Structure formats: structure tokens, C-alpha cells
Image (tube, rainbow, N blue to C red):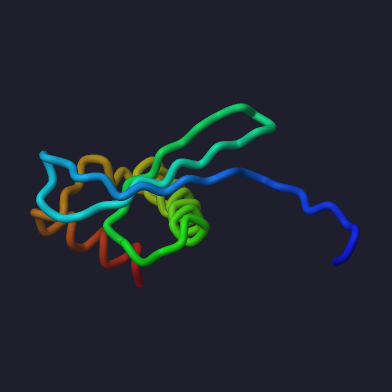
Length: 96
């Protein structure tokens, strides 16, 4: 819109450095939140993604993290591993 100020939620910077410890190319997305004055760095191998797409994909990760945290607490999945029969059974029940 003309004359209307756009609200900036965060600022981003993207660099594609050469990392000696990792063979493939990667990008580092720097996300700066001016209101909280915090900076977060995300490392990705998606070289064609825009910074906003990388941040959006990473934000979806918290849904998955919360699911597994709850699954471990509610189903005693902490002791089960995917290597054992019990782990496979629990994993299949959770996914189904």
C-alpha cells in the first residue's frame, strides 16, 4: 500500500561460507529480532531457499519437538528404542 509503513518482524542476512569441517556447501541464515534484540543462526544445506523459507521450515520443528517430548512422557517411550521390537511397535502406534 502506498504511504503505509510496513512492520518488520525480523532482519535477515545470508552467507554461504566454506566450512572445513563439512564437505558440502551450506548456508548460514542470521535472523535478528529488533524488538527482543536477539540473534539466531540457522545452518542449512538448502542453497536455493530464501531466508524466510529457511526460518519458516525451522519454526515448524517446534511442533515436532513438542510431539516427541509429550510422547516420551505419556507413553514411557524414553526407554524404548527403534532398535528393539518394543521401539518399533511404539513408533508405529504413534505414527498410525
